[in-house]
Length: 421
Image (cartoon, rainbow, N blue to C red):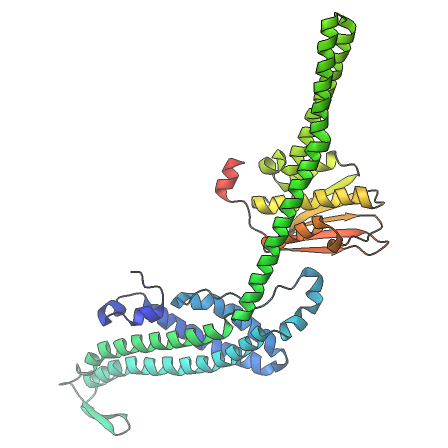
């Protein structure tokens, strides 16, 4: 069985524990704890007014650092702040219980850091003392040395080798002390910075809403495809069948001219049916999106848009398929809404990266008034973005331009996906 945590390592037999990876990892953890405690104490004391920010930073560091001793990965208990509410970020954080638990963890971490420093100092003395006594016995006349309190020892040339015999015992004790300290430190700090049940419940509720929105969006998309097929391709096919019936009658009557006209009309209607079918399929998931990516797909969409569409690429890489599909549907939904419901004369699409976040922004010069509460299309897009860990922001003041901006974590296309494209 693989030993995953330092607590499990402490349960091993002494030989297995001492030969495992846990003693050096525990020593490294104690050193980092001491360094953090000493490094943070002065700036935190000098800037108590921003103590919550120090706590948030400490929580981020500890969530990553505690993995080295096998502590399970701790999620963040902080809620995600939408882009349009970023100006209220600090206010949101100050009202969260997670922030104040991280402040407690910070203060406790500083105290444990000072304790870890004292522990390391004591260990250094315990390791150095036998070596120093042996050196004294070899280089100086016999002398009585006061080790601690009333414990004394006479060291000389005849017994200089006695103190080094303590080293194995000292190293074993040091290994167990460091492991126990690291385990207790990781358990207490990890418990403080871990999300609570209520916070997890909020995240589950958020994911449930996202899932419901995606299901609703899929149902809406299915109905749209069904409507497009019924009103477009199906009607064209019915017309073709009628044309072929007329052609059969004309051929039976021997009227070659009428038969030729009926055949030409059937061919024209077949081409219209194929065009309608291509348009429907392209709206589901265009091949260019799979083969060449979001930028190429949006550029191709601009070529057949009913409104002039300007596409600006600011260096957007290939993304995961789900992310590219979400960005493409944002552009199609925005362009369709602009053409149907506004007086917009043009559309602009911006695609790029903002640090580690990919964004797709669509703006028009219409009269605004877009309301996600009244449209299942925008709700479905918001659900797609939320399910992918992103956000959809909508700015559409009455009488002003409409701007839709979707931000998604930058998960670039995997190598196996790229090989299929």
